[in-house]
Image 1 (cartoon, rainbow, N blue to C red):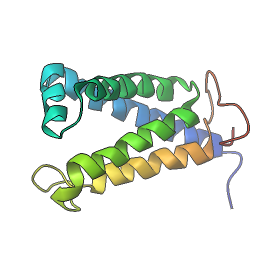
Image 2: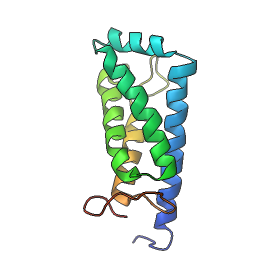
Image 3: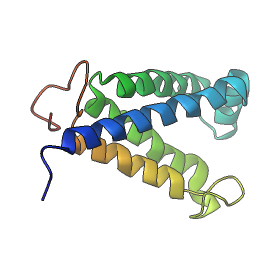
Length: 138
């Protein structure tokens, strides 16, 4: 049974926490790995450099959209796809535990699932621009 009186606030908390996590994650790319370092890492995976810039933009703009509630449930889907990509391309071969050398796929998998849950729940309370009806719940 879903508590309809509090479900919008659960979605809000989930949306805000995911948004903050993405802003923290993209901050690593700017301040720790540096943008050139992250682009080089993408190259080491055999991916084109332009994709590294797309990931940075997705995490930055997606994190802000989640926090503000701008089509947040729809924004969650490409972010979940990015997490799937990190599992397949970067962390999957390191094993399950994220504490393994190079980081396993446990944490990105949990993050991906949380993003799918947000999509299914909808934008939640205090969303500036809720996603249109017809997909995720509002």
